[in-house]
Length: 381
Image (cartoon, rainbow, N blue to C red; front, side, top):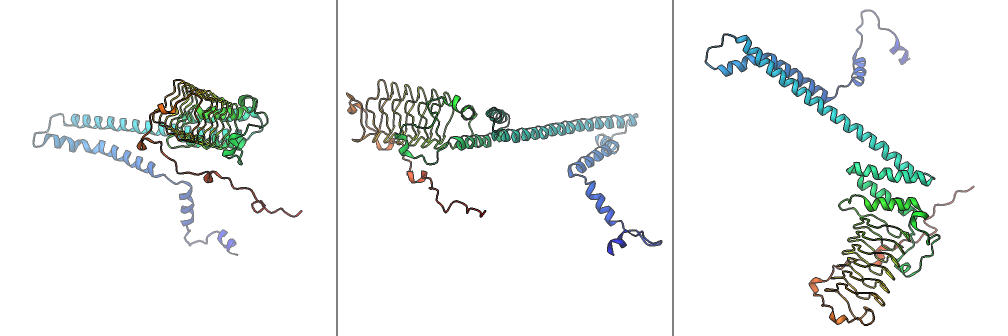
């Protein structure tokens, strides 16, 4: 009944209510605050251009006699003011155009980002490769998205190459993963492309790439920039890290047997319980690294820099240390040196020169075992 009464036309002599109409109109045609401010400044500038010249001329003359061409002087001042207003309008227009271009560019970047993320989940490896390289292009042009893209690519690699059950004991075992004898670029080109993109991207301050427990034997990461990367318990058997930068990397329990680490930088890296058996590491920078209990049998460390490194419990049987720098190396009776090597020639390290000890245990790396309680209850059919 109320709806019928609302639709009936008003009786003659009764006022028509316009509050609803005004309210609807105000919601449709809402004027933004910046537009009102610009309009107000424009009106004020025009009003000043027409009424301000007389006051300016009077203030400039003071008590002097007005000139004969008073009207011409006023018009000259008015012309100068209008030119200034025109210049201000041009500057505002240029700013608004620049702002519109920035918004348009941001919108295009957002669309490209969403499309690239969708490509990462495609079933075709070619489409996934396109999404990876599209993310690399976005990271180069958008500084704000570099951190997010790094995390996305790290998650992409981890979801496809991570073994959650790997621990430091697996570093002693030979890789038995299917297809491990084939180079990563042929075995998994999308994972190899993601690792390559992460290795050549511009570093992001304070970001740690989480790539722990990944199984990537025979990966080619030459000249990669992977500072502060977390690769603990990973399998990088026979991988290539020629000239790579792994400064302060977490390589705890990593398997690098047969890897090529020539001229690589592992300054202050954590290599506890790491396996570098047969690794080619000529000219490697291992200064200040923690190599306690590391396996370095038959490793080629010719010309390596091991200053201030911790070699307590390390095994270097058969290792080549020709030309290696061993200043202030920390070792004890559990360190196994190569045959015919005189450890007495090493200059002992002073307590204040010892590498920093990281108060961390393997319990922090433990992965919770899956139990029946964690599985969701099965639905009754």
